Amino acid sequence: MTTSGHFLPYGRQLIDDDDVVAVAEALRSEYLTTGPAVAAFEAAFAKATGAKEAVACNSGTAALHLAALAINLQPGDAAIVPTLTFLATANVVRMTGAEVVFADVSAKSGLMTPATFEDAVTRARKANLKPKAALPVHLCGQICDMRALRAIADCEKMALIEDACHALGVENVGATLHSVAACFSTHPVKAVATGEGGVVATSNSEIAARARLFRNHGMVRDPAQFKNAAMAFDGDAPNAWYYEMYDIGWNYRMPDVLCALGTSQLRKLGAFLRRRIEIAALYDRLLAPLSPVIAPVARDSKPHGWHLYAVLIDFERLGLSRDRVMQLLRAQGVGTQVHYIPVHRQPYYRDRYGEQSLPGADAYYDRCLSIPFFPAMTDDDVHHVAQSLSALIGRA
Image (tube, rainbow, N blue to C red; front, side):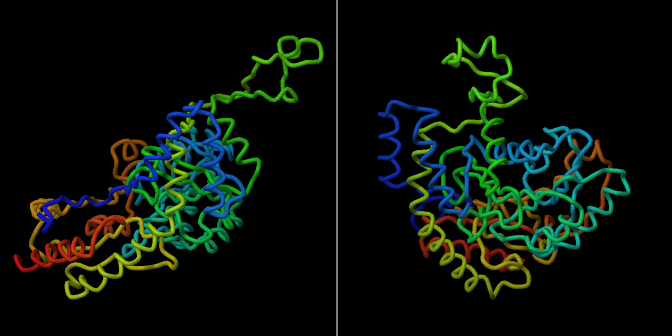
């Protein structure tokens, strides 16, 4: 265990007294859901990301789904998704009825590149699929080359939806300079926490309006849009209780209590990121002697959101399996995780699309391991993790 006797997970939220006060105030307010705290959180989030609008919802998955619905992704369409991501990035495409085309990634960084994007477009055409969108993933906080991806997408008349769940706090991520929307998560291990939650950030008012519509059952309460005048109006006045639905929607709302926590957390986003940068720099220095057996993931982008600190381990040279490494580290109070199993290898997608060869993703997956990384870590904690990794090499 660590010198203080506590266990270090790979990620953890940092909740201060001011967060507790914000939640308590929300609990004592008139609204627990669909109240003013939602609008306040959305305004704060838009300001933090540089987006014109932000739409809060109840998970990062919901945010991605809302963005896909907002661009009218549907059966007959396809979307390109890097296979090195969490299940949700691909699943939301299938939730619209569209097909997924998996893109390979860099074996060193795990990011979808312009070359792997173009390769996925080519394979989609050969399969007689029509890609309407792509969902680049900013893995671990590293940012895809959005300018280059946008150039390819424009040629193919495709929309880009950023899976930015790992990249909150990075300058211009959320401002959607090269995409129609950027989707974020506020899960406890992310940059700021609301418990569960997500946000669609966009500078496209139509995308925002459609996301809000689908977030709340597809319900329309604007009298100017009502189609059934006989039911909607009493004379010239609209009936106060009346609403209509023109398309299927979902209950993806985020309650006021969680939005209050999110607004409080956003005030500390800069401080959280600065501490993550300090921890990363310390890890870089302490782990340098362990290379090439254990080395940080390649840095393909600047700036960096520093959501995860992942290392690539030569398990064969180390003489230990990844599972054994994780067991040994856990015995020392060091938690780890794997981000991620390539989605094209999941049984559902293998059964639907057959076996696929995406060697970059497989090479990255075979070596990656995320180690403890969160703002509340002390320098002593970082030293303990580094020493525990060094001890593994001593066992080899």
